[in-house]
Length: 393
Ligand code: GLU
Image 1 (tube, rainbow, N blue to C red):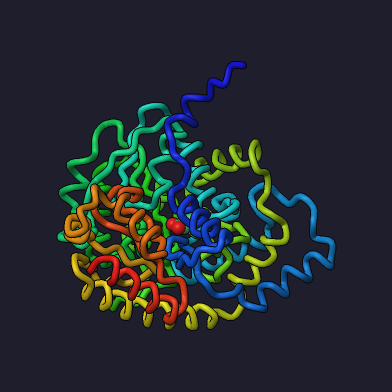
Image 2 (image 1 turned 120 degrees about the vertical axis):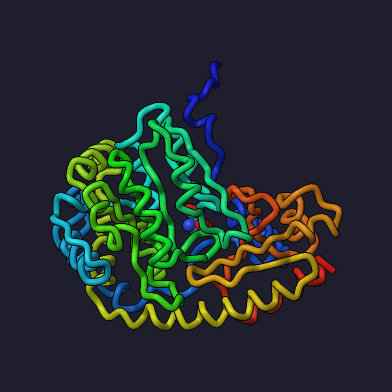
């Protein structure tokens, strides 16, 4: 039998964040004492008013196909959200609701990229951006910003990375995996570079928007640089804001020609996102937003605790961040102290010897680092950090 697979699938790897999460789960099921700090998902339950809306949808029989691009009601709620929180104005034809923020980005790359088109991705990056670009036969162009640069690229780096083939630039702030956030001035400076390159599409992945404790309120590059809106795509979803990762609802707002093409891809693949989840997402976007504050307060408290602890562990250095729920310590000294080959071996050491699962930084384009998700209780974090401390001693 010919087991030859496509070049596309052979060009990518399985999602490392999902793989580590699955591994921690499997080891726990096998009876091992593993603390999983790999998963990038809030540990809170989905708020009750959102669950009740979904239960009502099931009871009302709202269980059939919907419009491919999302129900008119949910799209209207998305439009209100983007207007209310981001000052961005969209019409229904400029909105596409998909099966999670990940799917929104996937549709974007599939609809936009031709073979060889370059996509600028600042590193550390979320694990799936480069692979989705590769699946669309594009070329990821990685621009690195280490801990010394606060994990943020400069306008000069952006300008230097742009070529005649650049088609898309991805900005993710607050960032997965570092939690750092670009200031308004920094985003405007990046925007000023992009304003001089009129053929580049700008994607702003705002999925961590509400999980933010910087001095400035949230703003994305499109709201700060209005001239980019006509070629900008805002990507967001309900997963992180409302602790709804399993419901799989993301959305994109952008120019109609591009959203229409993304919708075409979706119509030939998943069709509509789950009807029940759409009703839940509408309840989340239109409902009481105080549930976000509860999570935010907890994440900030955990952030302060985790960063302080990490910086007191031998061989680790960690930057304080302004949002999301990740810390991204530099582990190079600890790796060398322990005689480990690299961050992958270091994380393997932590999971097998200390029973703590972290994601190696190389998965995010940043070898020598690792990602710790603090979407778990302070008690569990304290135990995990005690274990890491002992493993690094
Ligand atoms: N975005 C989350 C993470 O980084 C969820 C898992 C994934 O799809 O990567 O862990």
